[in-house]
Image 1 (spheres, helix red, strand yellow):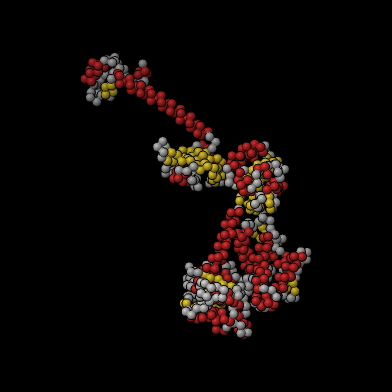
Image 2: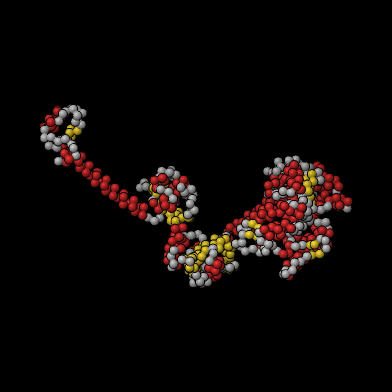
Length: 640
């Protein structure tokens, strides 16, 4: 009956069927004699299947269908469970191609499951560490990762190992933090927020703290106690300022202003740990419910930065730091100076940089070396006015063993030897004594140097770049500087104009200095107000670019940590200096006593420097202070 229902021919006598077009015949009678007759009747191509074998095939087919249906049901059930999991799950094979992904993962990645299967993991998660997990076989838990769409997830990664112990792939389980935070904003009970976010904040390496609308501590994570040194009982239920050792509580500020506060530097805990704080208010249905803060520890970073700065200060005398691209100048005078400097860089001629203090002579020296054929060799800087004559001589020329009293052992290479095949920058060359001038002349004429206590000249191939802010011609007339040395140095003089003669460059120079000071002070000042720029352009800047940097540096001190615009209110009033026409100090009204004293002292120093034609030794002697003290004060007031 079943065969007839499916259109299969049925007969009680096999002879009713033709012997030519039959492929398979099932003998279900159980008669062996009939089996022989069937073989004789039908062609050899026809397959004769005995009844016993047919019964076995039928049972196998029934079992196959049974297990297929069962497997399909199990697979369907597992797929339902797999896709109903809220966490995203994704797996890769040994070639880093995706082998499975659930719907939650596809939703977070904003893709479909079908378009990801068989494609490389980095096409969808560029920073995925699953290939590394496959290679190392290590487990990673609770790692933060940012996706292409800007979402942030917390992910745990595991290797996939088969029954033979071989790694066949890797998979990750991850949670979208942004979804959790979005959900938390809709919940009015902060206790429920604490429960929902506890698993995430407990695993964070950054310290997290939550306070209620009154500013009392609600929740902190283990990273918080590690960074601040405070235990939970020291903070929970206590005012938000309990953890602050220096600065204002940003929790209280966020609660007061109902606005987020970001990138604020504070010191927290008994150990005064330096941290950066981001705090945001928690507002539900336009009602303030508290605030949440994230604390990043910067103590180690700052320690490393200090070590880096110290290392840079050590090696800065052996390499150039700047190029012509670092020199800002659109005025015709500055363009002429730059053209001359670039021409000098292409030759080995001795260069004499002339200009007022603070105009950027050292910057030019760096740039000339960096643009020359010697740029891959050493660049040595020497301040001729900062060292005593004896110390300067030993530094420049070195000494043989036993030649220096008090130093019984060892010899020292001079800086001319250190700069061999490179360049040496002699700043404030006009301060050299007569004896040192003679030794320098020998280096320029004979290309050799002689150590203190030595008898054998040492050949050197060094390019000399000198600078001065003194009146060299007057020094020649007064007999303070050798005429032959002057003409050796003055073969390629380059005059660098003062800042007051190129005020159109001030805005660009100020912006460049702003970038530098932001890095030094950890600030994020973006620009100047129009009035602040006007203040900077009308001032004559007798201390030139160095004074401009000093004023901007002091202006930043008066700014709040989260200020982005430097206004005229931040510029210190005591930047005003000596009125040259009246030869007196101009002090603004309504200025504090300390600012008035600073202004007077600055004016006295400026006037004394002008009287001594920039000679710092003479200035220090006239004011009856040490040369070291003079340098400190000149640096303080931007008069270097």
